[in-house]
Length: 245
Image (cartoon, rainbow, N blue to C red; front, side, top):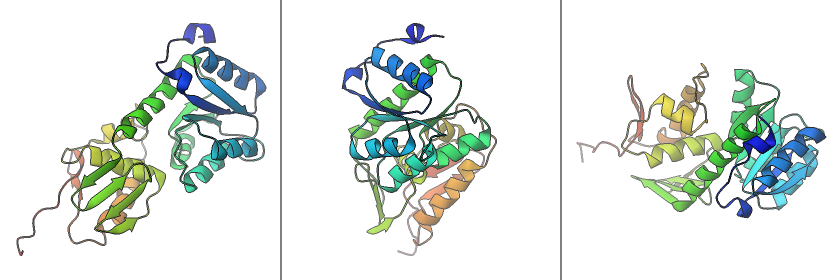
């Protein structure tokens, strides 16, 4: 499907700034033209170092980042931004489409992963999802479950006055669990809403992140908040009352 066929109205797009970091001139032109015709304000960079500089010093609503770039690869750009507490939504573009490649991109802090070649309509739809998620998360700035608090603006998490050091994906996982506190969250829900997978990648990525999160969230505390519901999924909930008290 061509760019013209993929065009559609994006509400509020003219207020949205997107940075496209892509070294292939024809691909960059294709993306930039399509996004501008869809109403976005678009900046561009053709190598990793230039892209990191722009993403670090200017405000963007979303990033489109090619994985293989001269100067600095796309995953290193995203890791550097996340390490500097910059959580601008990032869509990774790559010709590497194996499951392990996608998982590496998401673990690096990417919010979505699109394999080349792609249709512009899909690229646009994925950007819209990232922007909707950003808008939805900005409506509420603080979450609380029992003695656990999360600040969505500063990306700080505290339990019983003790700061928890979470990686970007752990933060996003905990945010989703806190927004659904008291409810059973299935693996499918986590794949779709935390990893943006609409299929089962057949990896243990959820188990690994749940285990890491549980270590940070519950290990040093008397009563756990994160529970495994056997055969169903996971639940973040108020701890059971201590009968001895």
